[in-house]
Image (cartoon, rainbow, N blue to C red; front, side):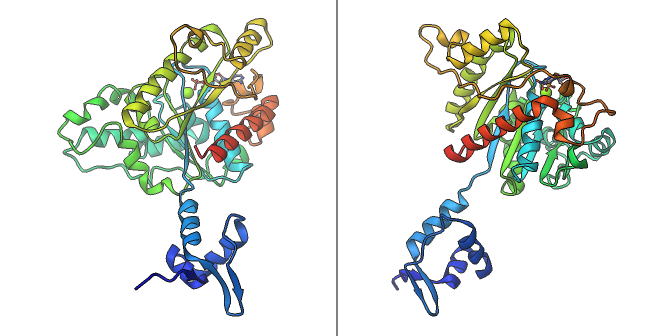
Length: 358
Ligand SMILES: Nc1ncnc2c1ncn2[C@@H]1O[C@H](COP(=O)(O)OP(=O)(O)O)[C@@H](O)[C@H]1O
Ligand SMILES: [Mg+2]
């Protein structure tokens, strides 16, 4: 029997596997929802093909997964990753998961209390348990992704409703060198680069954005983050030593993306902890003009990623962020004059993700 070419609300609901009410909501909410071919007294009708295409593209609304990477520590990776996650959740009303992949656990203890962290760590509710399970493949796995997600985290508003955290643990330090050995540990079903991917699969669709705070290296843990990323961001202090590694990052990520056969674009470089001195101004100008160090050398084919327009100034407010006495319940209190810069940066990132579907 030939498929009918026209469908009504009831058929659309059936096609999409949702209620008629949900289809009605889609019609109201999304300008992109196809216009009916005809409005009959019994209801509107659509061309089945147009509807099927729309449902497909709607479902394709992929989660944007962004890794924050630099080979150097102390350049503001964690600070920027947290601020972007908080602003996307609170001001842009996005559902955001921050994944802390750094054994230093800075993002974790900024977003939840040390008491909460200690309790979660004790119960194996951190990223370290996930990797431990893979190394002890003969034992029953303990990691449970649902239980390991701390909900409504951040000091802002005593918790941001749409911001969740998958915490890290200092236990990861002991594990990181052994993680590449997973393939040899008898656990042949686990690809050591896809541990995070498999673990997050059940919760992935829940989030509009997953922000990954990476350790300062390009080891197996960071690659687990890159494996699921739709793009990455390089926070850097605009000085000579800090920017020197940018070429290495771009080169390594490019090779990794070729290996795994996935597009992995650098969205851009964020200038952090910017001071008003000649050196910082000069390097910012170089970055704006795409004249950065090794990229400008003869024979180098990789392009320097663009510098985001919004730069993040060095401020005492951000520096004292972890101070318990500080007013860190509001964006203004937590970020001071850098608040508007973080807001601007959030807009830039969001617009890149949404227009380029990264
Ligand atoms: N814009 C800023 N102004 C002042 N201090 C900052 C700023 N950004 C980060 N810091 C401070 O610099 C230190 C390192 O920042 P962090 O984000 O932890 O870097 P990373 O994650 O790259 O190691 C922290 O003490 C942090 O509070
Ligand atoms: Mg960090």
